[in-house]
Amino acid sequence: MDSRISTQSIYSLPKPTRRNVNQQQTVSFHNFLNNEIRNSSVLKISKHAQYRMDTRGIDFSAEKWLAIQEKVKEARIKGVKDSLVITQDAALVVSAQNNTVITVLNRDEAKSQIFTNINGTILID
Image 1 (cartoon, rainbow, N blue to C red):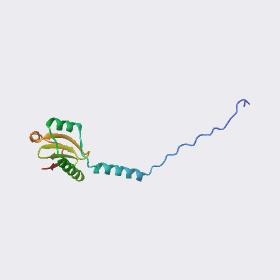
Image 2 (image 1 turned 90 degrees about the vertical axis):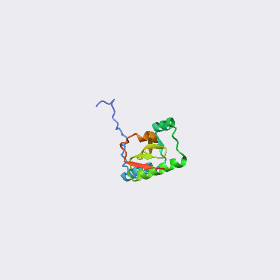
Image 3 (image 1 turned 180 degrees about the vertical axis):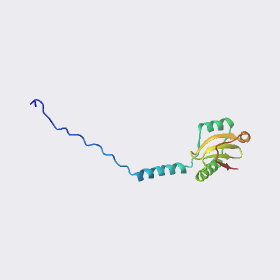
Image 4 (image 1 turned 30 degrees about the vertical axis):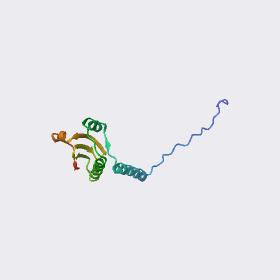
């Protein structure tokens, strides 16, 4: 061996160890998040539904809107995914699963429509 070449031991950094994430914690957080989403009582309005409401002049009083939110929440608890909500003045297609109003029609328009993929109906006077 040549005296000009010296050998040194190379110290390597310790390999990172994988932290075992407690499966129970992950599941608990997942359940917590799903419960929070399900229990959210604020009914959102999609852009499409808001546009329909604006162009058709459909407006709901605060009391009527709260009643709609409560009934959609009840429907979601009972397993309804998509619902038709019929009020005195309008018909709303609501995704109870996502807590979102998908579209809104006047009652006159709703008379001649066929609603599909709905597994629940809510009547509100």
